[in-house]
Length: 324
Ligand code: ADP
Image 1: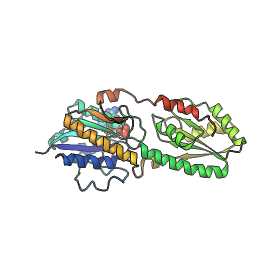
Image 2: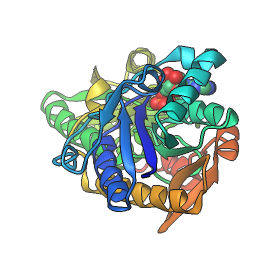
Image 3: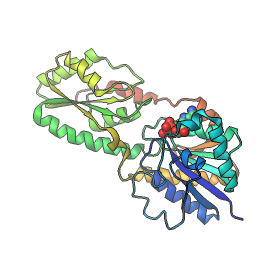
Image 4: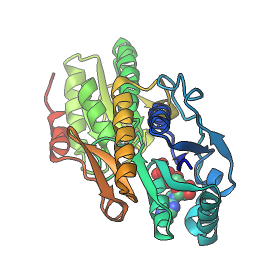
């Protein structure tokens, strides 16, 4: 009898989930496994809402944002052990030997809890925030950054036409990765991230100087986990920077869109890593990438550690003081 592998997408969605479903389904089928998708994350497992994944019905997914499996937040799964036991029972009854969880930090913790009651799990990191321990990159961050870059470039055009400073809020609850890398790519004058204190007086002075020199726009990027764009605008308004200040909260556009090349490539690598973990019987791990390597971090370790922003990116925050 063929072995069955279950797949869910869980938590916050991220562009690249669909390509990953496609690569993984085909790789598993090619290797003689049966693939069972469940709808809407852990909720679909508990309610046994299946989505049959076949070679043909994953066609066309490489260029589609979102996830055909759907996703959900399902707090009962975290708080109620009987709900997790129900998930285990469903998987056993359906003959599913491994559950592959595509999701962020919360979803990984859910998988770890399942592993503790005897379910074999494999976690594939998908989060636009790039905030998961055990991998250099999380699925979706490349597409999100490309969306942010495009939006900021456009905002810069209009800012220049009106002598404006724009405070642009991007996602990133616990990590400033998106904000600082986007600030580098778009030539922002300042960035606010959870990991570093930005000197508001120093920034205000620089903005005032730019204004007096006739620079027609200034861009400041803020990670939502640090503050809201409204908070930063309020602080800067009190400092008389000269520019008219405007706000843009990019919001959910950052989660959508056609997965860019790098996210497709990452999806492929994560799918290949999953296949290897299954062949090796290496369960309850997070499959990740480190440089050119595919890595396997035990969930026990991944849930206990926090990913830190690299020193290089932390130090980059100070380079925004350079004049361009
Ligand atoms: P993400 O995976 O994007 O971080 P969430 O934090 O919403 O998204 O987590 C997705 C789901 O994973 C939750 O709805 C819940 O079912 C489960 N989950 C989250 N945190 C935990 C936890 N600490 N322990 C067990 N399950 C969790």
